[in-house]
Length: 161
Image (tube, rainbow, N blue to C red):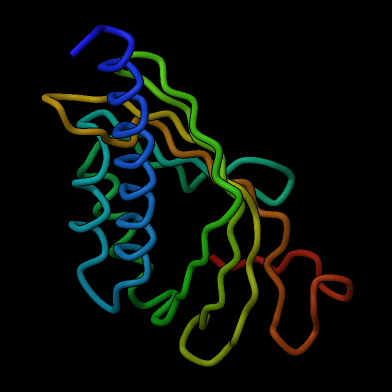
């Protein structure tokens, strides 16, 4: 095969693998139990999860797989039900690094009895290690977190400690 064709093939495969990585991340975050282990293996060893923006929670940042396990395992009780929907993806690949952006919408149950809507965007960095794409820095930017029965106009952001 010629070099340009191999480069195009690598680009297409890389984009597809990164899309599938984000699908796996959403599925792991939506698990009923053992979220931490399933999420953490999708990150590099030094991977970082960060909540950014005006409705962000800077204290929730997690760096490294052990911190990611703790962060997501606390969500088992905090949000026992979650259904993430990911859309509008755009992925830029540069060799063994990449950047991807998506919009997301989430229906979830907070603390067992409060239905919520959450929406926002992801702006993530990825790194290919040993032939496998992993998340190296995930930035989630919440647009709103609102009770299901109130909506984002009445309650643009509800704290969910």
